[in-house]
Image 1 (cartoon, helix red, strand yellow):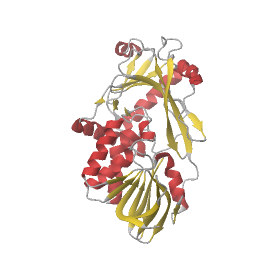
Image 2: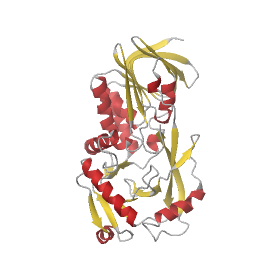
Image 3: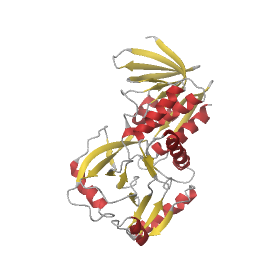
Image 4: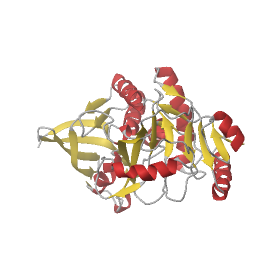
Length: 370
């Protein structure tokens, strides 16, 4: 097996976070190779989400999710504006309909302010229904800095920036094994035609999404502390509606204790509505949407939109949130230091708000490595 190339940095995974990291490193003069097992970028979980730009209201103070979401939100709006990427700052209503919800709503507002999201405010039910006449709620939290973005166009823009700065992309290459050496790390790859070769890098950035824990566990010489024992798959299903829902804002229920935000209504940049995701723990990767889940979706939606028409939900698509613990958990970014500095950087459990935080994660990683 021949050594195909020696590069400075290898990024495994060409999702939105991997591309953002590759762009940032390349723009700062690093030689970067991005390795992706699919035949295009963003073919994994980055293309299977709500495309929401989150404001940062939910996450515990000083967590990576809180810090990087708030920073990433501002970076992403500015980047989208500069690069003409379609986005809309629609605003979001988190609606409360019972006493427990009202208590939790106050807790979310307090957390939002702790995280620096000072434009979030609590409004009464009457004010909420002035914004959305079809909405049922006793009170709501209004987050005006929440929005949506065209994630496909975003990822294509990140790729163009990275390649213009010298980064290289190798599609349809799978990392089989890797071994940490004294002067870097050697990766064994298999191409689509089953040909095997090796690549040597000074630094490996593991941004492989659902497969990040698997890749970490297969790296020889990496201490066990960097190899998560668990890899949980939290599937989220989405449904569309036969009739266009009469809403202009994103509508979210108050999160319960499941580790998910609840079945919410989001609009894409073209105004198309979808409901979801729910939370379904699965053992193997699957993106089929069971039509029978429509009954549970309808019951959840009618808590805030009572006039949802009967039999109006249509299965749409599903995504999977990568987790190394269930439920909850923060982003996990681990750096392994060898004699030449950081040799391995693992990005694990980069679930929501990973899209929002992508540019901030890239800057965080760049500062660790440079």
